[in-house]
Image (cartoon, rainbow, N blue to C red; front, top):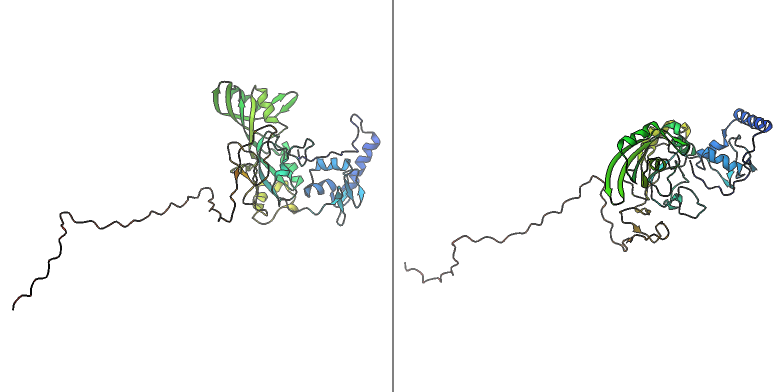
Length: 378
């Protein structure tokens, strides 16, 4: 689900109130009229512009936050034509730019939302400057980490989230408890937990280590639905307590070598090859190289077992939890060190050649020069 904070939602139908035939007919009539009109639906336009997904746009319209040519909209069954002015919260929505996609290594203790009612730090507040307005493809809860896809195209985000698309997500979970591979194999048939049915899940027991308080397990989990807290709830139903969850891959995109807090844009050529069926033809990106280049130093969130670089800001962390010591960034005008890409070999230092003193011959005796004698007689 695409996350967007909506604290002023108004205009929604009270719960329990059924649609009357009059309202149902009016709604259908408006939809039919919209189909006959030219242009694109307002929800599709806003989703393509990266404002929100189509479902979230409908909520924005119900809250009275979307206007067309100065008139507040009350239904999403409206089409936008050329020359119309569309606004959200008073801000004009410009034409949609080509679809863009970013890989982001989400650290723990960040909420996947544009704003949090509890004031907790969010993913979008931690992103570096220079990025366009982005929305998340799905979400990771505050205690989960790993790959999070970000895009400026709401339609693309919705397509990648839908279970019907069948996009595979791969996770690695660390849990405490005891389980056998045979029991994990039962998840391939699906499982129902507290009335919620989860589809087929592949789980493989990678490592098990006995400890004083139970066994510590590492489990690889592969699924295609991605429901709310699915991995945690399914493993807990097997008697396991998940204490770390990392998303390794989302469809054809992998976490790779991204460090926590780092962002990398997916190239336009890769988007065309992998996601063309989910993007409108007029919204496909052109070229081969990404438009955004990540800065030399990216502020990273808290990582486990790693050293962070302090640029003067505070690293997000839980209240009352001791923070790790941060390494100060170098100051002064010292020249930057040479950076080597993965797989490159650093040049070996050249050996120093020292000239040795000439060796003396064995048995040689230093003799003083003889004095010159008198000249020989003729």
